[in-house]
Image (cartoon, rainbow, N blue to C red):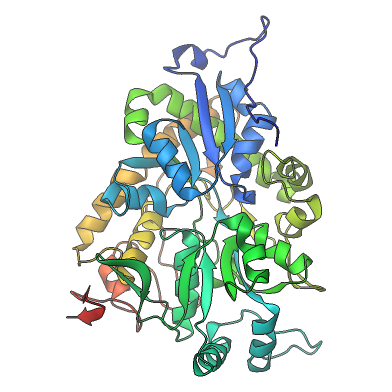
Length: 451
């Protein structure tokens, strides 16, 4: 692949915006993983929104999420397209310790769970059918449970892939499995595999490698972002059984992460970055997704996602193909701006923390206030709203499109697949409501749950 510097060259006639004259730093390198939800970065570059802010940006694809996080921490990258769990985990010291913040949420939804053709054939008899013979959606993990039991009886461990221990994909896959009565396993301080007491064994596979790993039989299914579910369907090696929109409609997904030090030292530059990203997100969703085909073309460049346009368009344009020929309308599969998608809600951060606690990544119980304090130290809606206000004042955005009066917490959500209501203001009550997972003061010691 050719060197992807993508650095804007400043011509002598380039007119520097007034705001850009106050930038603390204007040459920046941002990292990303080859997924369609990196789109705001690609669009901000290709449509000149970074340039409008006086920012000279380089975009660099990263090998995996760990390399990306390390790059932000050591300063090789100034910021990055991140898993929402990464800034949170780093800030509380789970894995690599560093204070990472996010002033911008990159999207809602965008993931799916895919299984091999063999597993799908075994699941299918346990799934109801529509009049036309297609399976009734959403498909719960209850349909997978007898398959897992059959594999166990045959002496085969049921392995599935996810992209990173603190990824949305890990927590969504765990949520779906547990909602269907399957235990996805615990973490503990002395066993970070996440496979303690598991019925289904989850491990990390980089997103672009998911289809090949599935085809090789190393895993029997996976949870990943697009286009890697559609890639398996189009290659005829797997079936997408459920989207994360069906697990939790309009769930928070990726974020844009920077170190707290960078934000503190470069407030004007940070605001300029957020302004450019907001404009990109607006463009991606405006006029009922009218720009999505152009976005698909951009993302197909080898420097960005690199998949063919047909595969990317299969989900980015409001449809989703579950198995060959079973194409359904999912207009909100990818959301980049509407529903306040770009606002960094504290309650989104709290949800990730509850799942870390539920599965033992947070080893001990904490009071509700601890969750709120961590959320406020990572998510920065103050920076976001400052950037949004400046766009509105300049006539580049509409006043009505931003949640000016919110306290940072969404209203109670009761649309998750297991029917358990989520109130970000009461994290411990939410954790204690699950039949599978740690509750109260429980801890995992020597592979056993105590308390």
